Picture 1 (tube, rainbow, N blue to C red):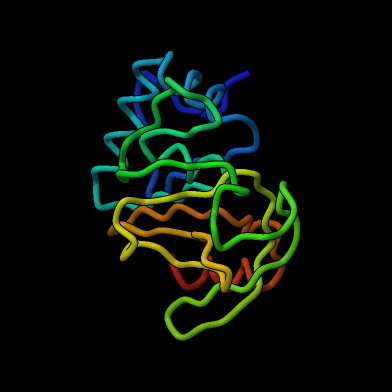
Picture 2: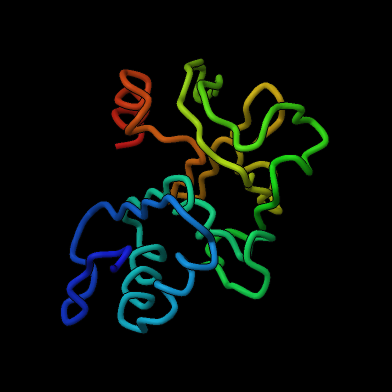
Amino acid sequence: TNIVSIDTSKGVNTDILVIPGVGSFGYGSSQIHSNHSVLTSINDHLSSSKLAIGICLGAQLLLESSEESPGSRGLSFIKGTSRILSSASTYSGKVPRIGWNCVEYNSIRDYFYFVHSYHMIPDNPDVALTTPDGIVAAFRSNTVWGLQFHPEKSSSSGFKFFSHIL
């Protein structure tokens, strides 16, 4: 099963690339890195000025690594890693985190649906949006977004978020 559907003879021919994901970092990483054409197409799109959105595991794959799968490489678009959620000094909830959490962006405060056991730690905290308990909910670098939450499961909040970034 491919996690990315790309015509490798033509590369990515789209204005918006969505890298979805549910599952382990190691498996997702191996699926991307095992196909040179897919990897090249994704990297070409990420380095263009076109919009790219990584969702959940897809966002974590934009980072360099994850302690979930030592030795597995991310796409390294954003310097940083992901770690088990219970390692965050500001988080005291259950793992996995499942439910609605507040996120503020561009003077908008809204609630989004999260399902995750690992949290993203970009090296540059200035690119991150956090939940009130300090967990990175999203990061942005130019036209590339990494979303730990699931906008597609967040009802009108997700729709508003997509409307804002599109």
